[in-house]
Length: 224
Image 1 (cartoon, one colour):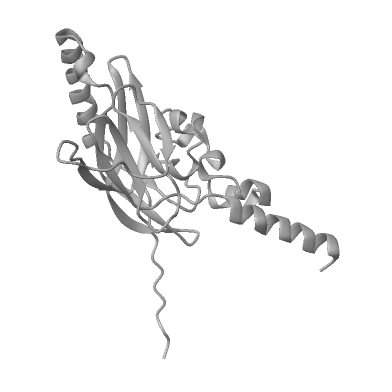
Image 2 (cartoon, one colour):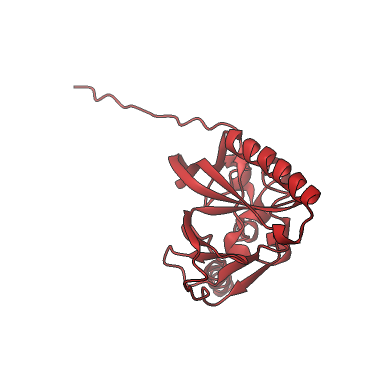
């Protein structure tokens, strides 16, 4: 290998190491004033705080302390689908259950078994009419989330491109975060990721696709 090639390989390896991996398991703390999402998969990244007043997001170093007056509900989640902004308010969607359904190019693929929706607009500031509108919208959104089927994701590979197109990608493109590699037309949560993208929350940006996946099994019979 020539000197130029060795330098180029070294640079590519450094870039690969610098790419932040997606969090695969998290703990969601539902405090009265905010939701805090804490990585629990062994990663050392910052937690994500989402305001329950206006849906704004920021990274924090530590989960706030709990007290008798500040006892949060705690959920285990496997991904942040995104933030849905509607006229009545903002809603945080997260994955609460997943099912392993196979692999694609050697990378695990998961199917979303259950989604949970959290409203992010504090109802204490709403009039009765506004609150009723929020409740109606929230109920409709829950119904959509519960009935959404065929939602798949991978923490490691781009599911929006065929194997051939993935193979045709240059080394630089393959080192991009998955959401930047993805074909926007095939991203089910493309719009919902916008807030996370604006806040540069790379480890939380999980692309989700909707469709069907065929797992092909090859059985080899030994000839005696």
